[in-house]
Length: 302
Image (cartoon, rainbow, N blue to C red):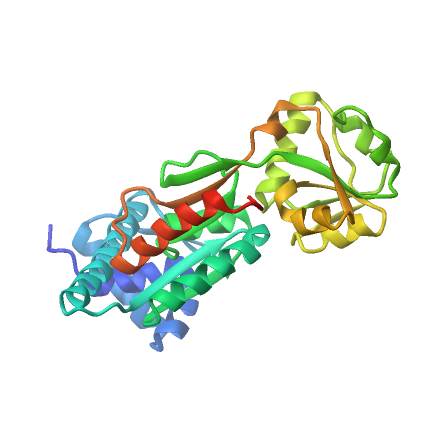
């Protein structure tokens, strides 16, 4: 077997990442035939098929997934090396990529502001996304650090900090459910206008677990792909399900009320600060991770 040609792997990597040979060619500013040629040569050198072609583009074979894992690790090690060399020169520079769930924007932004004041030469890129996309970004080294609500167990993810944040039914102060004197059963929620996030969010995945556990299927009047829609929906008379910290300001101002839910699934949900398992972080990313773990534990809103 020949020595692995990393420059060829890049063409393969971009084709898989972008979903097609043409999209990779557009990104790399080369002809599609050049991308196909490098992938074919790489497959020949490794004596194995790396991609499968289908109507919508390409996807990696099992062997291709192993090559992608190697290449992502290679890129991470390159980044770590460059950061270490910069640190030996006494420089605090580089880039740190963060992915967070939508409900953490305010608290994480405050932490990032303090970090930037302490390390002004380190550039931060921040992505706000649903749980599934967040875990993909962390697992594929597109983000150094993630802050996510109750992710499922994944072999690629390491949790550095976790705090219990139970989920509740959220309503305005005039809603009939405010008269409830005990935790709410799920079937009670179907009597009211209910808004829920879609399945890309960890919140909805927890709700699905509770539905399976209790044998109840919720029938939301509104399903949306962002959490920012849910608070005003509740303020205007609807019902939604969220961890209380995501509406802490409205609770403090007595504009919303968080009502406990009767199901053990809802009482054990947690916030996680995560990285890819086995990834060595650069100096800057490591410093930010340490700050986030310390600060997130002490934030009253979490």
